[in-house]
Image 1 (cartoon, helix red, strand yellow):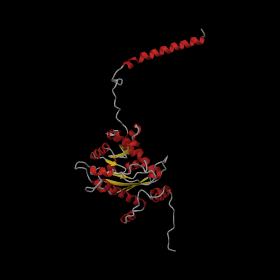
Image 2 (tube, one colour; image 1 turned 90 degrees about the vertical axis):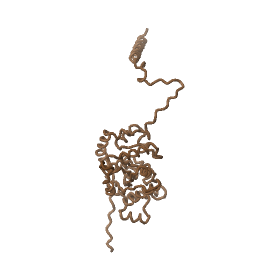
Image 3 (cartoon, rainbow, N blue to C red; image 1 turned 45 degrees about the vertical axis):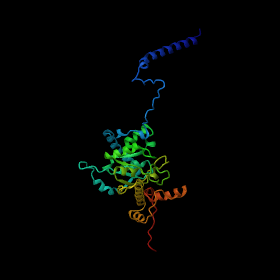
Image 4 (spheres, rainbow, N blue to C red; image 1 turned 120 degrees about the vertical axis):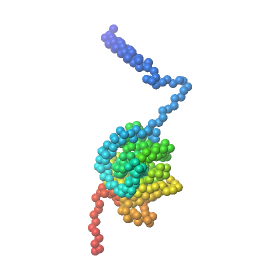
Length: 341
């Protein structure tokens, strides 16, 4: 017999011995039954699928425990604060309009102010970090962010990070389900304030989108006031479709709180909220007096921009951004004053 055949047979015997050893070592594991192994399923029985645990069904209650709150406080006052200062350099205005609301108390034995629904514009992923940074401390540490379930909660790692760092809860941006609405109502009843974007998602072209009724509906259902907020500059820094942020300046302007009127519908209250945000946007691009004068004349510019073709809307957007805080990223043109010569 040749030497190669002898070597081959020896290798086969060694492999067979190794296989027997593995089978003997794993015999206890293979013989184990439930609960160490999944139970067997009788023929003809259909096992229902596991309930979904992502998207709008992701449970975020763990993110509001004491340990998670402490970790989030470190994140908000550390990396988040630093990132906002370096990338966005926010200019925060209008917090004095919340002074009366901040002095109010939830109950005689509770020194915290009542919960609030913040309704900001939405042009960038930076908006949420800026809102958490800009909201006065009286509401900041009890703040909950209503985030898109199909984006922030589509993977376990992303859902856990959003819930921990932002105290985000999943919301279906197309139609708020009963589960999400009840969760928001319970959170407000427990004293949490909410950030909810009335536009439903980031602007696709840099202009505003029509407001949806989520903030108004929640306010009517809970009695919590809505604070309109206009965020300027984030679209130029890191708008939808941009691959990397371009550091610049931003402005976060808070408006006066709004309460639903008696028997007011969700649609009418949403229209009032949008009008208030439009006024803040005009004020951010001009000044307080000019914005109020144009509002009295019914000439407040729309958040949605001009109704033109795409290239003209982009052209108008560049002029619009140059008039706002984003224009400060470029050195303004200097002109000599007109001395009447």
